[in-house]
Length: 184
Image (cartoon, rainbow, N blue to C red):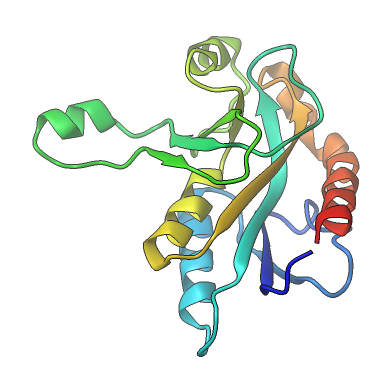
């Protein structure tokens, strides 16, 4: 257990619905911009003292059929930025962040809700899971020097099953809350 303050970050209230009492929770809204702005604002508003450990909980789509359950990504990438093109034009772009304490999996983050099997297959060449906030949360934390952990529960297969996400989110929220209670 840690004595470091913890800030639990979730894109939606539904994903954080079962977070145990005693945790500070920040609901950011869906997407990279909402997440980055909300996390940066929350961290900038801290008084003196240590920055919290930011634990981003949420659902993710599996990019490979073998993936199910809970994951702690070791790497998160921004999958919908033209990083190679921008680099070739002389602009440095950070599109990949390594995280401590992960399980070895790679999470791809983008603003597109992935439900197309062709998009899924293209992303599967680079990652294991896909979400819409993880990279933004990790980038905001990295910018200010806050520790970050991503905790994702597979809710769908990032194909047409993703359209059933609203019916799956509560089960994922319960698993995520249980993980929090067991680890902090």
